[in-house]
Length: 426
Ligand code: NAD
Ligand code: MG
Image 1 (cartoon, helix red, strand yellow):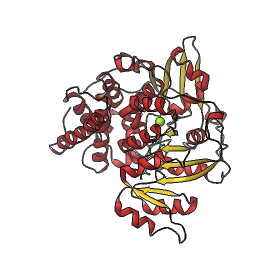
Image 2: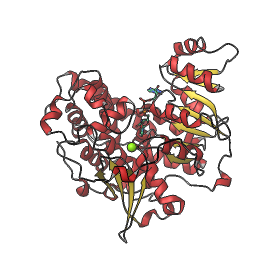
Image 3: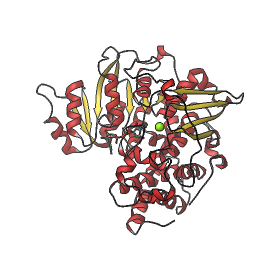
Image 4: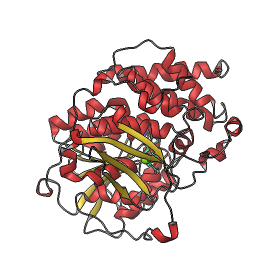
């Protein structure tokens, strides 16, 4: 098992270039005005539902132009009936008619389906802000489509940056698209640094990502051998979809977020630290060479980051309980347990392999998490299968989209075969 300590992570040459934020950040005058027309990809998921809660009751700020889900047609129909967007997208062709049949009389939106459908919604001229909140690698093509179409992109789908951060950066440069990070840690950094701070990124010593530590932060190593699906899905601070909940339990979520931070802020991995902060109140910090640490604090509720992105640069008031600092009493910080949760080190290691490494890491992890949620492998098989994917594949070219998608496909197949042939040992 690879166990690369955070500070010992080798410098990845791909980060030599591109220091600086992933997209331009124009002033408010150059951004879409209000009310903004929202395209919510993944509206039936945890992030999507929270985005609709933000939009609800604020028609002067937000209208809903398009909604996209996968297979939860009942929920999508309910959302569509409430917000009446002109366009909808579902995963399968059969879902189109089924969804149409669930909509109220007199409301007949355009319903499309499949990967082309999601990409067409993302690029549609009739929306201003695209929330990319599909889970996993399936979010890549719609994110790229939105970036190529020059949209204001509220980006929750961290996997698309892990797979193709450079392609998204290039698309933003060519189209003028603006990326706003929804992931709470990256959103915190974006807020703490502010516009001028983002232009001064070369002067930041390190970015410090906080991690809750997940549900097993203080469990003994032996406990991790017996973890069940239900235990892994039971996150102490955040309510999230199943895949990211398991990623939080293995610390792969923080590994993916290290890669996400490198891609967003154009910094090498040794300038991205991780510290465990069980209260999830400090969402991340930027450390400067003069000893200063700039932090963003807030309640552990994704509506804060979502609202900030949808309304950027204007804040949208939210009906959330204020953080009671006195009641909290203390905020604590500790080092991650790298030996017991190897996914964080595996993610750092993947960056040192070149562009293909994070692609293989992500594909192996998604496949392993699916197998774990289906009851087919044990919790600790997840890092074993990711390690297998990284150590048994020769380095390959992964600089264009076709190559990235090919590595994604072959890694998924290899990991599934490996798991079916008996879960790999140590
Ligand atoms: P979720 O599982 O709750 O929802 C996923 C959404 O994607 C659903 O609408 C689902 O219908 C759709 N979907 C699934 N497979 C699809 C496919 N193949 N094609 C098209 N649509 C598909 O997930 P979530 O927790 O809302 O997370 C969404 C994204 O946001 C992930 O990339 C996650 O890492 C990121 N994120 C989530 C949180 C959170 O608090 N939930 C925080 C930070 C980042
Ligand atoms: Mg996060």
